[in-house]
Image (tube, rainbow, N blue to C red; front, side, top):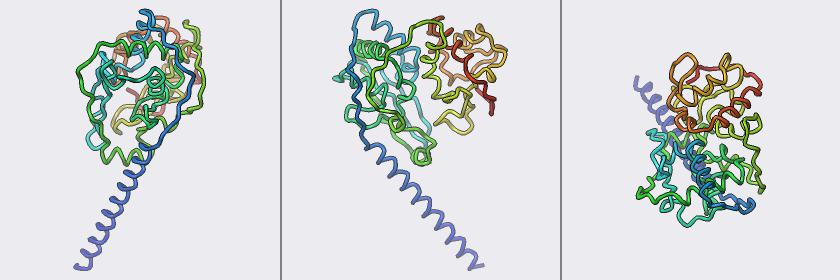
Length: 298
């Protein structure tokens, strides 16, 4: 019996040592990624500060998901509080907040590349969703942010917990989108604004982060295992949905059968889209190859 307990102690000791070694490796990998620098040399942004441009920027901020993380007033919010995974705050983006003193090009680098002024990567900034945002739209968003009323809110301090570090090291928690973005300098002309599949494809960039690059639905990166998967938006997933059903989903957060869509889906932001934008999204989704749903969706 004594020998048995001795072996149990040895095994438990090895487990602890391996766990500590794994956590140390994960922490080291995270720290190295956070120190990496990226060079962004996109063509200089030309910012129109007219009332019309600022209004467009406000519309983009409200309907492209920016307000969901940074707050309707751009003053910053706590947007992830997941215990051992981590606590993440979206910073204050008003004139007196994190962007104070930033140039338009530096703000554009944060939006489209997930890169800070010092070249280091921003944490959990969904730059993949905005990487192809047109120069005109980014300029309008910059004009809006630099015109926002000052906010007294202090940006909270984010931290990555032990589980978050391990998940990042295993490729299950996309903390630094800058790692997977093509930073090659280029101009980004925008498509014609119309209820077309082409314009819908441009708008749908912001949907792929949750719904997957093929829009067939997936387990949303960074969410707990028990969290429902995103909806399959291909014709196979939407099935008998009509264009009117799609409008209702984005305007009211309701499926065709009247059931509510999970509140994680930011339909409250999308409800501010114009009919033209929603029609364009629908037109694009109808062109996608049908992909069978794999799991239960939200």
